[in-house]
Length: 259
Image 1: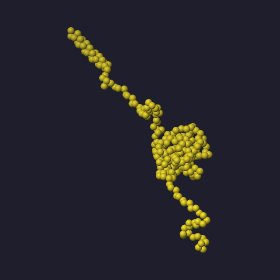
Image 2: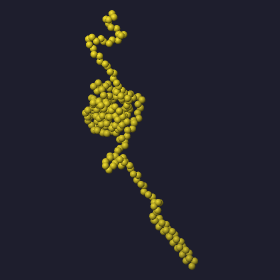
Image 3: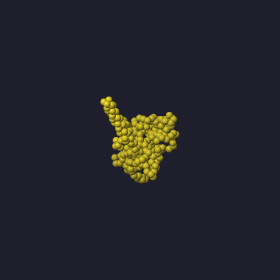
Image 4: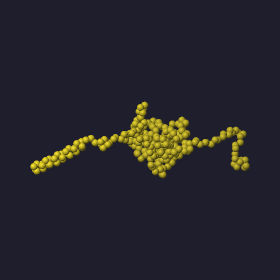
């Protein structure tokens, strides 16, 4: 009897262990409260300029911010030279290695610089003047937009003419286009282009990146000054006849009279 009682006690302990293990397994399989469940990571919505500005009435092409940024180039201008035009009221700085060419009397509205087989041509006029400052003709190659440059406070498009990977010329605000200055009360207009010098080997021209940056920096140094056109001296025409004496200053000696 004593042995049988010991066996029954052992069996009850085994069943108790089995019941505890089974209860634990059932509890683990039960769904957890919603507050304790691990939520999957939520995707952060991407906001683009297209989604901000688009309306059902129009289609807006997403803008690339880098194309419209106009950062000021950081360059040491302490050794640069300054060109000033008093009559049209503007000035700018340029590198000393850029040679300022003598102004052609037939083209008084152009400023020209020469550097490394390239020529920088800056045309200027009042908007009321019937003068052409943009040049004419086109150069062979492919047009390529190259961002914007801050010119007198307004973003101005920069256009490359390329041949393969070589940059052949640079235009601002378009090919042979004018740049109306919004900050000018007198209606000042510019045209700016960097092209190969006449007689240079066009196919070997490749404007280096250093020159491109210098040119952008030159545009960013432009400043406007007093643009009031100066008053020219007025000369009075005196009609003379054979009997009209010439107005001679009293301290001038007349030969033959006092001799």
